[in-house]
Amino acid sequence: MKALGIDIGGSAIKGAPVDTLTGNLLAERHRIAVDKTMTPAQLAGAVGELSAHFKWRGPIGVGFPGAVEDATIWTSANLHPKFVGCDGAKLFGKATGCPVAMINDAAAAGVAEMHFGAGRGFSGKALLLTLGTGVGSALAYQGVVVPLELGHFSWKHGKSAEKHIAASVREEKDLNWKEWGGRLRDYIAEMERLLWPELIIIGGGVSAKHAKFFKYIKPRAKLVPAEFLNQAGIVGAALWAVEKK
Ligand code: BGC
Image 1 (cartoon, rainbow, N blue to C red):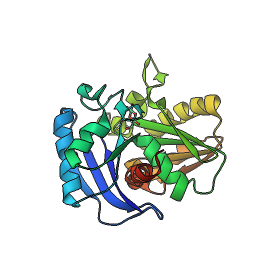
Image 2: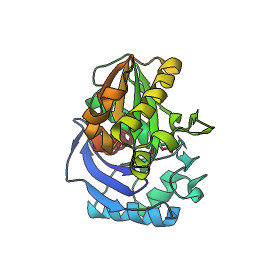
Image 3: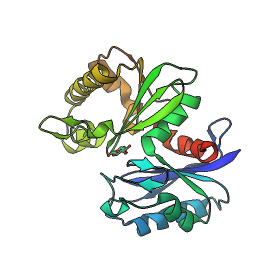
Image 4: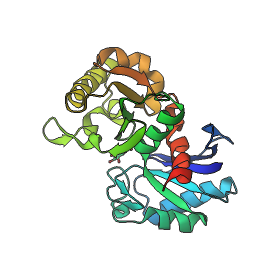
């Protein structure tokens, strides 16, 4: 079984064909730079270009950085506001000429990590957080992944937590690892108080540098970096394309 997995992010869309039985990429990942001013039509053009790059014919899974209900996109905190209310399966299906299944980007990463990565074989309660332009979240229990929007938990003066703890904030505000790690510690302590995960998986590009900031977090749960690092979203979206019922 194979499917094309596409991960839409705030600065780039990335994709690759995936062997959904092993989670392996079947070709080198292709990346197209995008920015948050791009309209749905423009971004769909980039998705079409990505699929054409692989001459793809078959199922496509698209991970989107917003709340997704079936195929409908309901929030777009870090992309164009015109995405709100869009049918993603129709929009990207038209652009690629292929059947498209939509999933939240962090839930896609969760699906990949629970199947083949850091949560493989774990059936307890796991919390996955992706730290990038925004903060993505999903909870898994007995292997079932539930998309969440914990990046928008109201934090310090009522702002979305992601405005304090996203990896992009560390870069923009030039926070050192200790300062940023301290922010993460406080946020994760609150999530533990509410959710009591046994395992916390941290994804997003910055997870490759986990040695620099994990030491400041000190959670009750076991804390591990995502094994797929930045590829979890691609692999999980592809799995979703073949698994969605
Ligand atoms: C969005 C989430 C998304 C996360 C990471 C947040 O701003 O609301 O849906 O998972 O960013 O991209």
